[in-house]
Length: 600
Image (cartoon, rainbow, N blue to C red):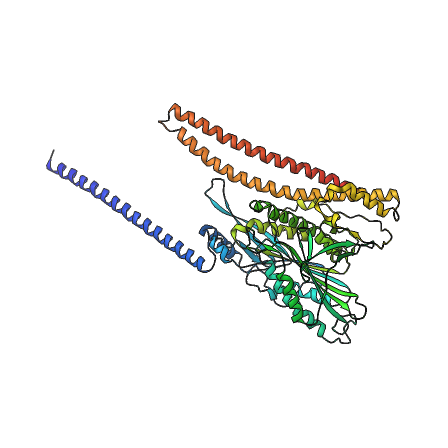
């Protein structure tokens, strides 16, 4: 080999080593850059997490980021709420929602804010994982109501927009019935909202009554010169009624032949100024029944009904009534597993009365919107709560406000969705939903033959008791005996048959609602379990495909796969069983609905 060839070979070798060194240095620089970028991302994530904690919104950073970006894209879409905003006086029903701030208990659980309010729409952001169990995504559900108040809105603004018109309506002196309900999950701020509204009502009521009438005012308008204010305050707890202003005295619900519902023994206390009224309200609120539940340490386990009545000074005739109803906290059946039998019975009674209340309010709104007054059927006998508030549903002069309260925590999204579905079904205008289910709900309208008025009172406890169906024969026999003097036998039997079918239809609808929740819960659980099994199957398959896998390993693989398949089969069978029961009751509900309509 010549000397020039040797030099070229040496030069090419040096160039090759130089290129390798350059590539190594480049890889090292890229690795340092990746580490630096990773460290920056960690620091940025830590800073964001610290900022979220300081802002009172802890939780999963990925989900919080998704919600923040979603809100940024829709900033400015909310309709601003002004103190001058008021509900339309021509609408008998107003449904609003209020979101409370994140509390300390939710911060300790690292719950992020999962509710966005863009008046009049409220959005629920449900954090989800795809079937791989790793990929995160958000499911956004929207509901449009009359008003939506976020955590920055105070009670004064909510009151002015939704409740003050009812105080003015009650003072018109025409016998109007105004009702304000507070409904929501346990711990969502119902009692807080209702207590503040009670104070505002006490102030404004006496302010309106103190105003002097002008020539342009209706002479029927209530003033302190022609009427006085009386208050009654009682609660419904576990099927019993207790007077909160009379040492929790037990009361009975009675009904006379004219259909007037009376709470026998209920005390009425007169209030001459706002301070006296506030004192009576505080006395009643302090006497309420509360117990510890999973969601709230001081959960109100009773429906509290405060009735403020304006009575004529001359004949004590009722000239206006305002009912403030603080409903017991709603809970799902799956959240009462750790409760004792008493707490579970309370929850079942609460949910039954809430279902009946929904149907009554919806019927009230239908009657008002159709211009039919109170001619449409209102199923107020579904529970004692709705029976006591009968005049609020059947009176042609009735106005109602439903205040729905929400907890913002991510762990409460299922509760929030159920609460908003309840409010949405009352209003019956779905947003972002198919609305298919609304068509299957029964619309009951029947004409009841009016009997001659009877003087004696009938105890209606058995009519609304859940155990009434067990003694149905005795109930119908007693009803037949009491009606023989006023109704012909043939018409009476037909009326009783219609009542039987309607009661069975109501119970079937209640069962459908419970089965729907149970079926959806089981379906969601099956999806998560299937994702876990899918991951487990992938590991089994990977182990079985190893090159060094032995027959013993394959035997273990088959045993493990058989266990996985058995779990899948059991999961599918349980879901099919739930689906079958739901379909049977759905068919039963449709048949009963047709039968009731034919009897009308």
